[in-house]
Length: 500
Image (cartoon, rainbow, N blue to C red; front, side, top):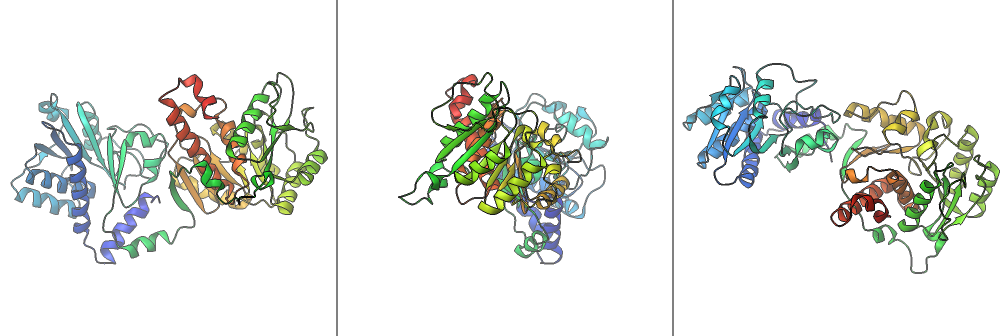
């Protein structure tokens, strides 16, 4: 589960104001969680520097400072409030001062000079979930920039690196990137999207005593679930529904259409992934045989697209008579092979025999316009755009950068009856009732052909009792895990074939 920044603030507020959990109690719990993580990160001779802003994020830092002081650790706590502070932060400052510990006001970068040759652990409690927009000039920004020039071994951010927005992931680099982040209740979009995720470092989730009723009150208002999907099933798990006497049609006859001149390798790679994924029978319908690789004997072949244009009636007849359960169309194409009549045909076949459809590469161009007004099933229809293809889906499509974009895109999937996996540094799956962030990705997958593998693997798994948007998440995570395992033993040039 992922909470937005505003949802987290509402849960915090309702827990205190409606359900009787004192905000000081929640702040004390947060400070203890920060303290426990700080202890795990500490090494002998390390010195803690705590940066306490004016809000409740700063209050959390002051609780941690008090606990570190009581445990006799070496620390300095900088007051970066500029004379302003929240009520809870004020209370925590007085509690710390009662212990005989004085905060050091931050004025400029020279205040950090005594610490430049020390082994430092910086705890960033300057700004939390409430920031909207860019960080303005001022004391906080100056402090972050000065702290970034210290030789810190660890930077522990409270909730998120100061200056980032909780609900935005397409952002400029953090001014003080964290090696570790601690957040409360649930992850936020900033922790799971790229590039913001990289500035958060290792994200640690701590539970606070939020009122369950407050959580229910806030999350029940959602129409869309935000999910952090790291589940990577074993391939056999996805086929365990098969009975002992299962045959090839139970595993599914799937059809892969694509491969323009010189790019037939793309559809062949997708077909290979479909077979490895468990499909019972894979048929390839290439759109060209010019500069094609050797025809693999693992597949059967159809010629209804060899002239570059697909014979619609021949394709439909093949799908109906050969019990095709799923079609992938597009790998290895730059322009769409589809027309309105094709989309009408696919909609008819889906209604008639629950045909599953995966659209990739060139087949994505203008697909939303071509399918407008037609009835598709989002559990059985999947689009697989990367950022360049995303812009070709529809001119008005917002690139997902912020939680607000997510709501708009989910409405679009509901309207079109199509789910989507956005293949990017932050893979996301858009379904009518959920958005899943996938964080198992690996930059080593960012090569020509990786999208063909993904589309093919989804195709190969598509005959099971799962929606295509579920399978898209499983397939992406499986490929990412394969890349991680292979990276330790194989050179990058060998990686792609190794995954297949």
